[in-house]
Image (cartoon, rainbow, N blue to C red; front, side, top):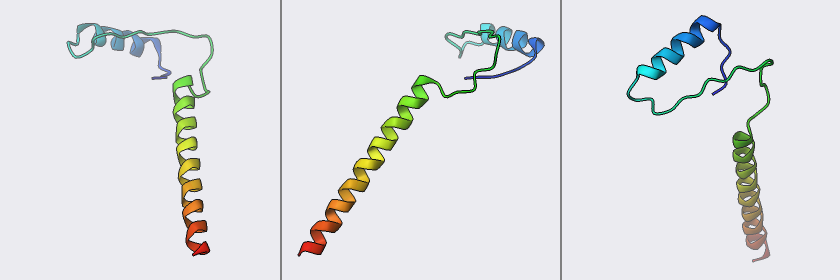
Length: 70
């Protein structure tokens, strides 16, 4: 999760995470600049989606070509 917030809010979140039984592990990282590009996980997911869509389109095109030959 990529969130920009004032320090007071970050402190409150850290305290809430620390004392919440539902939160197993958390990590708060401070960076000099905001990260605006997609994470590697999101990029990989998008690439898989594109490959799946390409495969579906190729399959549909092949099916249409087979129908027109008959």
